[in-house]
Each structure stands twice: as structure tokens, then as C-alpha cells.
Image 1 (cartoon, helix red, strand yellow):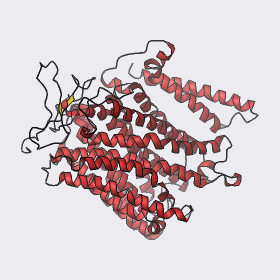
Image 2: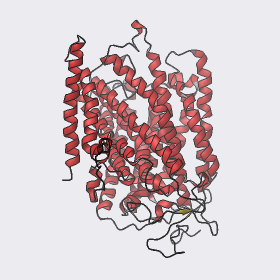
Image 3: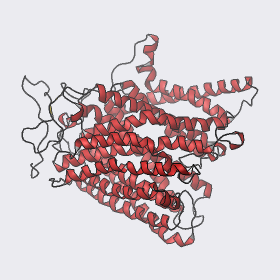
Length: 623
């Protein structure tokens, strides 16, 4: 039965939750406490329920049985059923991540549409103030989860082993585990309205996050669980890139997308535990009577902000570094040129990793932190623009005098450059103390953040989805509909968010459902544009869904690209390659006579017979 693992996971999870809640109640009785504290029982029950879910969905059969000397289940399900199971195939896990987070992105988009409907006119329209705050908070965390995990979890899982010539990631079962803790995260967040919601925003600042509705507890559990997945994923990618590269795949021959995943994974592994402690301490304040953030008992709410942003600003680069990698990958292949300043870009990625831990406090310029900290954090925030600027200049150098092939993924990569430029320039105003004091908590920040993450990271995600869709599915989509989607989303996006800079400069506060009547006209305009933007994604869904079901066969290498993922069938076989690839050159040496990236032996080939990488452009696009 196709759904048996899911049903078993739900059943085991329910049993685990009841068992954990019961044990929690017993412990509270022995401590002389009220045994029926809902939040405390939910916390303990969730821990046991999460373990039950994981055991039921596949951890027991494929992994945990070995801990007790029993034989583990071997073999993979075939067809669509494998996507509903605890698969250890990195390609299946990548698709699971992608589909999951595309669905989450659509749910977050629906909430954004509801928020813009409320903001079409000043005063109360379709929501109460509290309902708006809950919708805004849920929208924020859903979209942040998409930005953190869609590229690194989806495209990263599917592609990194292929790009480095490996059969799989270093720890396949750990990889599967990192995905299967995600569905409970989504369930917890979607259940928050049943427990009063949470109106703290995705940042969950205390003291509000300590004293508000019980839905906040579900949010905290969800975020901590998501962080656990991020840590496991980061560890796995680092080990994979270090230890699993094919012969000849030196560090200087790694595709730039692999470098971007490696850099982002370093941040995931090292920074996530800080936000986990911040969230855990809020949870303990709520359910265990601690006082980390209660000023009347010696606590300090500012401590939370430092802990939270010590992770959450580096997390911006967990989002954007893989986006850089996707954009550069696409730009190089469709410009038919070597990637400009490859080694400088790699150095810039590593510089971003280091500097990302030194800029967090620019989020706290208006928090009341010590004034003497303003200048050093302003300087470090400005410094990080240097390596990001190098990456941007590499993009321009790559397309300069290139023979551009303006496919759908290439258009989205170019759109990424345009949008990210606006996000980067406007970020300067928020990095400098004098201007940040005036712009903090206005719609200027909303516009800047969305230009960086949506205009940047999501555009890169779409470029990657369109670029690698033939490899994932073996099918080609409609280029005409793909290009129509690009122009629709690019124009609607900019028409939606550029006016938000103006609204912020004129005093419109973010995270608030009401505003001054004189801003009614601009908000009506923004809302109508946002509805048009949201509709553009329906076109993408129709195009890709139709292509997946009955699109024309893509072939192994429809883009005539050089990197290793295009030197195997579409979609790739279980073992990725018929024989271990031999890497003999750089991945982007288009136009370099006699250059090759890799030698891949064809299945059943005689000695000396091999499969060439695609170093030529399609007809009318020759080097």
C-alpha cells in the first residue's frame, strides 16, 4: 500500500504523543504541580510523538532494527510511491524537499494575499488586528523556512552528489531523517490557530513570546525541530563534499553551486544551535517557570535578540549563498563562457561565511544596546558588501560579451541580478546607524528584505527549478509559458515592492494592520499589484505539472552543458553513473579548444569508449 508508511508514522506518532503526555502528567503529579498543564503536556508529548512518527515512517525498518541485531529493510520502492517513503536515495529526498517547500511557499503566498486584502484600505476590513498579526507571523515563518531549505534541501540534495560524481551523500539515512522531521514542522505551524495562534512575528521576541497564546509553544517546537533538520543537513553536505568527490574533482574544479552549498552548510552547522538555545529558553520560560527574559527576576529580553540574530543574520546567507550558486551556474552555461573570477568567487563565499557572524547587531541599533557598539557593527555590515559585490561582479563579467542563450532559466538568473542589486543598494541605508534609526520597522525594511530574499533567492530558486527540471523529470516544459511566467512575475514583483520603499519613507509601519489614511492610495495600488503577482504562480504550476505528466522527453543533456549531472540520463539512474566519472578539467571552459570537464564511461562501453561532456551550444549557438 502506497500510503502505509505515512499511516504507520501517524499511528506511531499518535501513540508516542499520548505516551509522552501521560508520562509528563505523572511527573508533574510527583512534583506537586497541576498535571493538566496543556503546554507542558504538549511539549513532552510532542517529543515522544516525533520519535514515534520517525520510527513509523521508516526509521525503524531501514535503520533502527540494526541497533537490536535485526536485519534492516533493503531496497527502494519504485515509481511515485518512493516519494511517500523513507528513501535513502538523495534524488528522491531532493524531490521530496522541493515539492514540500513549493507547497509551503504557496501557502505562505495565500497568507500574503490575505494580508494585502486587509491592507487595501485603512482601518479594519476583513480581519481583526489580532487575526492579522497571527497571519503575518505564520506567513513570515513559512516563507523563511522556504528560503532556508528549498534550494539547499531540494536542489542541493538532488544535485550535489551528481555534480561531484558521487553515488549518494555521505550519510544517506541521516539525509532521509533530516527530511522526515519536516512534515511535523508544517503540521505544528498549521495547528497554531487552533491554540490561539502566535502574534509575535517570526522573530518571537520576549516578553511577548513568553506570555501570549498557546500557539506560540507550537511555533517554538516547530522552529527548534526545523533547526535540527538544518544542522543534520549541513553536516551531511560538508562530509559529502569533502569525502565523496570523484577522482580528479579537485577543489578548484568544483562547480560553483557545490561551493555555495558547502559555504551555506558551514553556517547551518555552526550557527543554528544558537537560535535553538534562544527558542528553547523562551519555551522553558513558558512551561518550566524559568526567567531568562523576566526583568523582574533578573532576566534580560535583549539577550534573546543577540542570540536570535547571531543565527538569523547568518541565516540570510544560508538562503542567499545557494541562490548565488544557482545564478552563477545558470549564467555560465547559458553565456557559453568560463565563469569569470571563479577563484575570487570561492574566496568571497568563504569571506561571507566568516563575516556573517560579525554583523548581527545591526538588527539591534534601535533596541537600546550600548551606543559604543553601533560603529563597529556598522563597519562590519558594510564590509560584508565587499564579498557579495565580488559575486555580483563575477556575474556581470560572465555574461559580458557572452553568446547569451535567453532560455527561461537564464531569464530568471538575470532577473535575480536585477532584483538583488536593488536589495543590496537599499541595504546600505539599513546598515548605517543614522538612516536605520528612521527606517527601522517601516515598510522600507519590508521592501528591502523581500528584494533580497524573494527578488533574489526565490528568483534563483525558480531559475534552478526551470534549469534542472529536465534532469529531475526527464521532461521538457513549454519555453513559451516559462518566458511568459518570467516577464509576468518580474514586472508584477517590481510594481508590488518598489512602492513599499516610498510607503516606508512616509512612515508606514510594518507588522501593523492599520495605517494613516493618507497612505490608503499607495496601499490599494500595492495590493492590486500583489494579487497580479500571486496569479503568476498559477501559470508556473500549470506549465510544470503538464510537463511532468506528458511533456516531451528531455534527453540527457538538453542544454548541452558540461557539468556532470548532464552526463547521465534524465532522470538519473539509482547509482547516478554507469561507472565512476573521471574529472579531467574545469566545469566552465566553454570555447577553450580541447577542454573537457569529465570522462564518463558509457554503459557497456568497450575500453576507450566514453561519453563526452556537452561543450557545444545548440544549433546557432556554437562557441
